[in-house]
Image (spheres, rainbow, N blue to C red):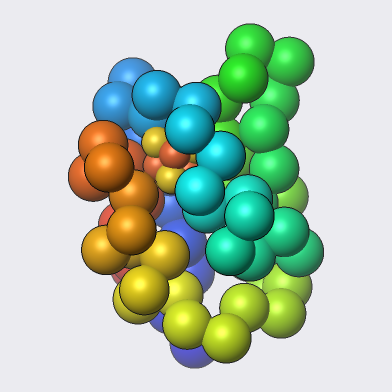
Length: 60
Ligand code: SF4
């Protein structure tokens, strides 16, 4: 399974990734996304990567 990684420098805090996969992503106290559980349920990580308007999510 690919592991998602968020580049906080690029994240604009739109919340799309959290809305799509709330078990995997969350927003921190600064409103930036982080991976709270890389193994959380997420139907389509690739879609989340493609939906991020800032290109801040990658898979490794
Ligand atoms: Fe940040 Fe991208 Fe998630 Fe929006 S979708 S909160 S820009 S990582």
